[in-house]
Length: 383
Ligand SMILES: NC(=O)c1ccc[n+]([C@@H]2O[C@H](COP(=O)([O-])OP(=O)(O)OC[C@H]3O[C@@H](n4cnc5c(N)ncnc54)[C@H](O)[C@@H]3O)[C@@H](O)[C@H]2O)c1
Image 1 (spheres, helix red, strand yellow):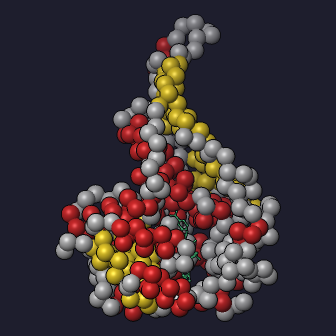
Image 2: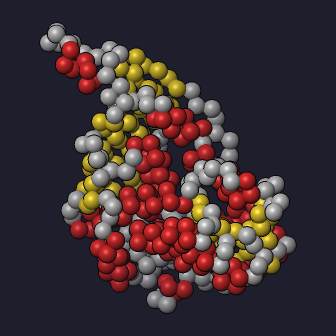
Image 3: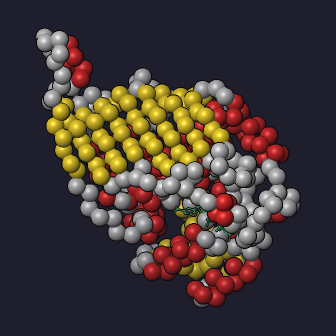
């Protein structure tokens, strides 16, 4: 196989950009597209000169591709991916891989059973910033982690939420800011600091006319006893996100693209018991970490790496199994917020499935929708 033949499923928004990347990369060939909005499917098919489908099952069974990129709204990622794995195709899923941990488990199982490549579009992993942060952690420069902080404000106006019938509904999206805007940061926050063992969250809809959460504040507890704080919302203008990981040997502080490492002259665990002077304190050396400028968004690099994994066994930058971590974090937040109690990770699959079923029943048709895709079958039934 010289090139991986790829079909893109869901080509209205993000999937359209993926078609262009697939077309331009030397490792991939765009062979077909699918959207269950026929107009969109036809338009993309004609633009790229490839066959188009309105039913993803037909695309998967067509024999035209070796792998698919799934860029539909989140609820459809598991069903489409599992069907692709079972029919011998590799899958690159948009984030989050699933709305529920139970569905994410099934996707991972199907990929393993059918021995297919499974990757997730966490393109921030390819940025110089995240690569550098990961290197600092892997070199053990922080020592044991004592505390974390992640403040990740996004902003969305009402018109954004009115731009699609699936957006910000339980039935169409399965959550709010936590599942739509925050996953990229949650992915690299948990990649750097690990998954907490327990989350106690407050979630609410503060600013927008939507049924899902637009603000989250959460207290985190890690396996080793470390504590953390996490905040996200679509109510606050996008400013530099703030991330801190405080360890025994150093503290890493990230403000947007500015990274500072505060190195301790001796580890807290040693100094605290050795110092004789009652006012002694640890000497801290400030080190500015240079981050090379980011080139591109990283989407193309993830697609390239997905293809190179299939062709040459190159290590995946963003493996599908790791997509489970952010779903655990997201589900724990929503469950904790809704039930008003601390939630352990791994999240109780049955409890979360039941919660989602209850929430989906409360979903109301949107009154104002500026763009109504014909393609959201579950939602269309109610509207
Ligand atoms: N990685 C990123 O940077 C990034 C950015 C934006 C969106 N996303 C993700 O991409 C996914 C799609 O988001 P979007 O903003 O492109 O949405 P969108 O609504 O603009 O596009 C989704 C497309 O999927 C089609 N579709 C829906 N159900 C389908 C089905 N069952 N079969 C085939 N086609 C179907 C719709 O008609 C639509 O054209 C979401 O999961 C989102 O989280 C990722």
